[in-house]
Picture (cartoon, rainbow, N blue to C red):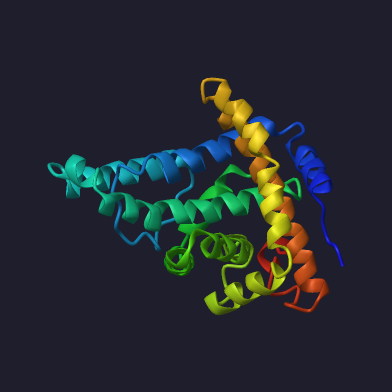
Length: 252
């Protein structure tokens, strides 16, 4: 049974963005800037007991921690591969889950900027870090065989960050299992779906590269819709129960 098609997912994504594009754009920009392009900083500290109410609090906390721990060697260390790796593990990956939280809830017309900080709340941070670290390790190990097995494995684990975003109480093993089973038979179509955005990104790149930023919300919203379709498949085919996937979402 076919549960989704690219045209429908893109139409739904456009509906989600309609009237809320700039809110969506800001949330994705913050996730991208802090979680991605600022990889020249190092961050290694447990913040599982922290609960940041807004972006300003989070940034102030980071800066104070940086200045107190690495006042002299920050620049040189941050430029190293170790610094970039640690930033991905402890900051980028949690923000990826936060992005999934925001985009999934936005599919239900709940546009709350604070959702991007969801993984940093008490009891969620460490589990998020460990789960996505394991996901990255699995993908890396498969990529060592050849590039294609790594790509296949990445699609196999596509749902994991979204599952954590919706139900942070689910076990790591169960999140991986649901994702692997729900994406079975879907990977080639998922690849073509991603490929269909190439033209948009190319057009954005031609606009001095800045245009790419304006494509990201559309891409993120479409992927949230893809996750929603795969989630429906998982429940419909008894891969998991409704209480396992999306339970956190439906309680809000």
